[in-house]
Image (cartoon, rainbow, N blue to C red; front, side, top):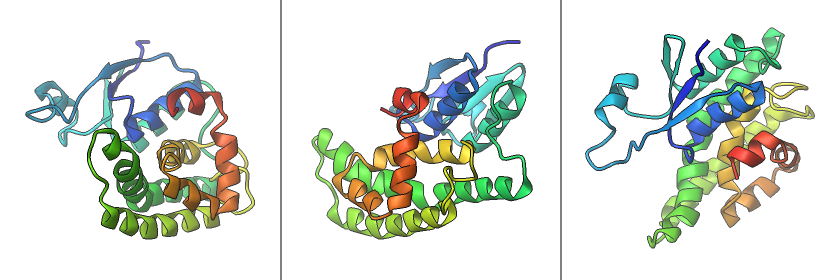
Length: 210
C-alpha cells in the first residue's frame, strides 16, 4: 500500500483537519506543498486534482479526493487505528451537524473575520478592518453558542470519544483564540472553553495547530 499524499499548505485550516486525522490514526503520509495564492492562481497540476483550485487534495492507491470532510472520512475508514466516527446513528448525525455548522457558520467569521483581520494582517503591515471584525464577532458568537449547545455535557462534540467533529473544529479555534477578541469570545462559553483546553493539549493538536 502506498503512502497517502496530501496536497496543500500546512497553515490551511482544512489541510490541518486532514493532517490531524492522519496523525490521530497513526498513518504515515507525505505532504506536497501547494500555493493556491501564487501569482497567476493555483498551479495547473493542482487544478487537475481540485477543479476549484482549493486545498487540500488527496491521493492514495489510485483514489483521488478533495474536500477535507470527505477525505477525513475516507482516512478513518480506509486505515486501521482508533475509529474517529461514532458507532451510533445519533452520534454520526451529530458529527455531521457539527462539521456543517463549522464550515457554513464558523470558519469565515472565526478565521477570516477575526484572526486574519486582527492578527494576520497587522503582521503583514496591513491595517485591520474594524467593521469586519465587529461583524465577525456577532456571527462568531452565534456559532460558538450553537456549538456549545451541541456539546452539552459531553466530553467531545459528537459523544464521549474524540471524533472527526473535534478534529474539524480544532484548527479553527486554534486560530480564533490567537486574537484577543477570539479568546474573549471563547471564554464566554465555558463548556466549549473546557472542551478546547482538553483538545488543545492532545499531541496531534500541539504539533499541527501550534
